Length: 222
Image 1: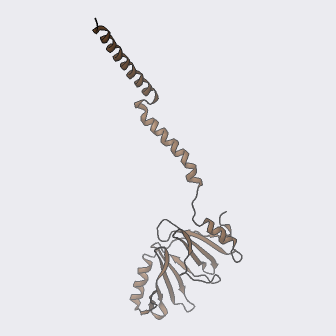
Image 2 (image 1 turned 60 degrees about the horizontal axis):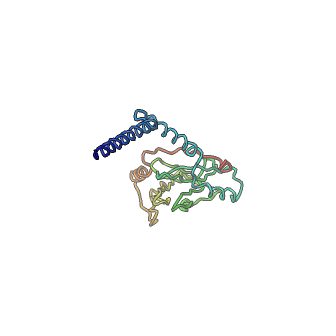
Image 3 (image 1 turned 90 degrees about the horizontal axis):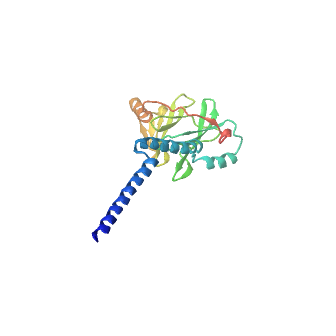
């Protein structure tokens, strides 16, 4: 007889455990049925996408913004006839900023700015008078070329490439003297016609040129 209460107690405990499992399963199923889990995931992904979309479309990160506000406010004269454009020459994902001016042959290059060590830095190797900007081309292989035909019709070209965040001259070609000049030593190197063409080909690659999208400087930030 003493064992009967103990048996009844065990049966009661097992019954409560069983009820607990049923309740737990029913609540879980009601909140997130296994058959609808993929649907719920889709809803969550859509909500996340919809929430982040406005930030992706309205927030624009331009490392030149503050610099250009100061630049345009302190511009030495009228901005009429001056233009700017952004283009990633070296393919590192950060665009360079070009300042140009109208010339008889199109827009000539006045200066180039790049982001170096987190700061906007003018590329001093491109030296030009704002009243007489360089004629130039940007090739798809990352080379920038200034110069062109002089008054006598001879080719005079200087080629530049970005190296470690700085735009450095690579070589200079002077057709009228059949030479090239080493940009470091400034040594003149005589060239045959074939050598002249070979060096020009090395610099310009397949000759494909980037079409830059120029905008009036006075409209910057509008």
